[in-house]
Structures are given as C-alpha cells and as structure tokens.
Amino acid sequence: MSDNSTINNIHNLRISYKKAKLKIEDLACKPIEQFKTWLEDAINSETLEPTAMSLATVSDSGQPSLRTVLLKGITENGFIFYTNYESRKGNEINENSKVSLCFLWKELERQVTIRGNAERTSQETSKQYFSSRPKGHQISAWASTQSAEIPNRQWMIDREEKITSRFASEEIPYPEFWGGFNVVPKEVEFWQGRENRFHDRVLYKIVAENWIKLRLSP
Ligand SMILES: Cc1cc2nc3c(=O)[nH]c(=O)nc-3n(C[C@H](O)[C@H](O)[C@H](O)COP(=O)(O)O)c2cc1C
Image (tube, helix red, strand yellow):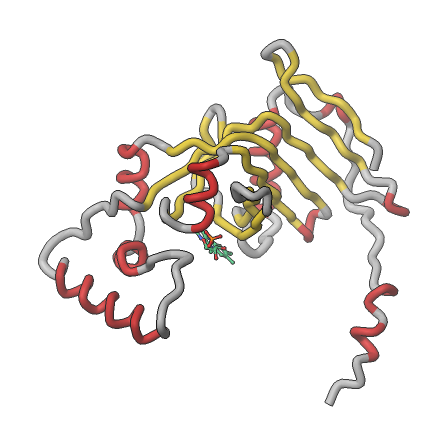
C-alpha cells in the first residue's frame, strides 16, 4: 500500500522551464502561421499526440465543459476537428458557438490558447474526411451515440456488429449526425515557459480587422 507520501508532496513538485524564449518581433504576423511553426516543432519533437487539444464549450446555464479532441486540419481562418454533432459538445456549440482551445506541448514547455467561434465545416469537407478514415473508425462513428448514457459495453459491441453487417458489401456511408467544426480564432496566445515562472506570453488579437501582437504579464 502506498503511504501517500508522493501525493502529500505534490506541492513540492516543480521543474524549471529553460528551453526557449519568445521575442515578439520574431513571431509571424498572423497567428495561424505562427501556430503552424509551433505545431511542426511539436510534431518533430515526438510529443505524444501533438494534435491533441482541449476544447471548452459552455452550456446554456453557463457551465463550461472541457474534453480533448484532435486537430485534423488548419484552414486559412481556423482549426478543424471532427465529432458527433449530437454529443454534449455538438449540442452546446449549437446553442453557443463561443469556444476555447488549448494545446499543451509539455516537452517544449509551450502552450497555445485560442478563443473564437466554432462553425460547422461544409458537408463536403466532412464527407471527404470521413471517407479517409479507417473502416473501423467509420463504423464507430455510426455505432456511437456519443455522450448519451448506454446500458453497458456489450450494447455498443452489438450495435457495431449490426452496422458492420448492414454495410458489409458497400462503402460505409457518411453519417449526417457527424462532421467537422472549424474554430475561427478571435484571440490566440502563445506561451513559452521561462525560469522562475517569468514566462513569455504573446497575445494576438484583431484590431480594425488586422491582427496585432502584444505581450502579456506572466
Ligand atoms: C487523445 C484524445 C483524442 C480525442 N479525440 C476526439 C476527437 O477528435 N473527436 C471527438 O469527438 N472525441 C475525441 N475524444 C474523446 C473526447 O475527449 C470526449 O470524450 C468525447 O468527444 C465526448 O465529449 P462530450 O460528451 O463532451 O461531447 C478524444 C479523447 C482523447 C483523450
């Protein structure tokens, strides 16, 4: 049995961030361009799941919810992920399109946070991505009543089997309750950890239809 000494000492767990600095003048003029550079760094650093991001949505009573989703595309004006439109996040976005994203690349001591609006991608974009997915993932999208309560795991497995045999001799069609959201940013912040919690933070925001950069206090 653990004596909880590790848990009781989490207040003493700390590391010093020393890997890099952020100079505002070195950052790209547009946040999406800067994001691409950092994402590439994260991919090259062999971070596990470099495209994983936290997505925050808000319910109609003002209750925020967070979960992880995978970034599947970067457009000129936003960040794309795919999901079930009838899930909790899908329903919350339908009611309130304001969302927030957060990427944490621990190995690089970096974080990017994004505030913006989520809009559904075109059905063509969703269909195209759906058709590129492995068959097992396509079947799961059909089988999952994402976020709804289910009796047990077997219920899912039975549904999956039914769907597999229903579409045995054809391509899995695109499920209309599933698709992409493009998060169009209003603000994007790049955070680089520094020594003694004296971190570098650069915020991009739109002023008179142009992106400006400013430095925030750590
Ligand atoms: C690493 C990781 C990646 C995930 N990627 C996705 C994704 O791209 N789309 C998705 O709908 N759920 C994804 N999930 C599951 C979600 O975190 C979440 O459990 C699910 O979407 C239901 O969320 P909701 O009930 O808040 O709508 C992922 C989970 C993890 C841990």
